[in-house]
Every structure is written in C-alpha cells, then in structure tokens.
Amino acid sequence: MSIFIAILSLIIAVLYDLKQRRIPNWLTFGLMIVGLSISVIAHGTFVLLEHTLAMLAAFLSFFIIYLCNGIGAGDVKLVTGLSALLGLPFIMVGIPLILIFGGIYSATILIWHRGLRYIGRDIINGFFASLWNKRMHQYMKYVKKNGIFIPYSIVIFIGSGVTLWIIY
Image (tube, rainbow, N blue to C red; front, side):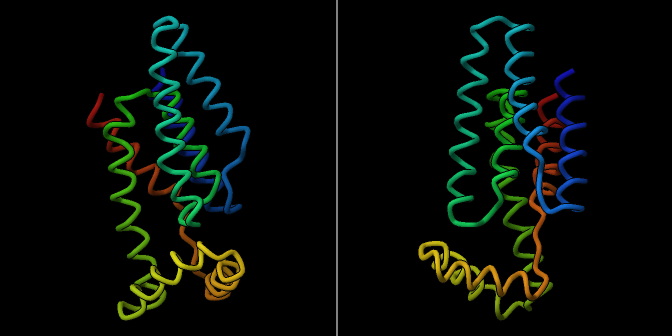
C-alpha cells in the first residue's frame, strides 16, 4: 500500500510541478501524515521512530540544497513525505540516487540552455549568489528571463522509482 501511495503522490507532484511550478502543501504534508500513520498502524510505535528519523534525514539533506536555491521548498517537503512513508531504506538508497540524477539533470538543462562553456560560470554564480540575497535575486531574474526552469520533481520521481524497484 505504501508503494502505491508513493507512486500516486509522485505522479501528482510531477503534474503540479510541470503545470504550476509548485508542489502543493496538501500533498506533501498529507504524505507525511499518512506515512507516519501507516507506519504506526502496520508496525507499531517502534517503527515510528525510524520513519521520523528518515523524515529528519531527508529534510536536512534537501533543506541545505534549498538554502543554496538549488531546489524549491515543495521538493524538500516531497522527499520528506516520501521518507515518512517509506522509512530508512528509502533514505539509504533514495537520497543518493536523487542527488546523482539531479546533478546530471540540472547540468543537462543548463548545457541545453546556455551551452557547455557557460555551465561552470552558472554553477559558480548560482552558488555565490545564494550567499548574498540581492545578487541571488538578480541571478534568479536572469534565469527566469531566459526560460531556464528545472522541475526537480521529475528527478525525485525517477530516483524514487529506481529506489522502489531496488528495494522492493
């Protein structure tokens, strides 16, 4: 049942992200509540600690990327919700896969839009701009003006799908 809920949630998240460039809170927080509830109902309160630690690990891992403006808050909450639902096995396999696929995906999008010779400069500018809010605003304005949009939910979908295939 958890796998079905995870896949359905991922499909909904990708559709929302592609259409509205956001992932709704009702989906992400609902996933967290359902995930923790299912873990308690199916396995008792002991597993609740495992799933809560998985949520915390996912949140901290992706919140750091969010602080550097690498992903949106909805992406952080989506991975946190999936971790609440699927627990530590998802964290051990899923987070590394999502990060690897995300790096490849982001680099591909930047190369497609800007060309290979600009990718290093874009990554460095994005990193340093995230350290200084005014400069970040200018950089994000440039990114939006040039139509560069990276819906990270696609990466979360692929990484989670591969993780579910490996684990289950």
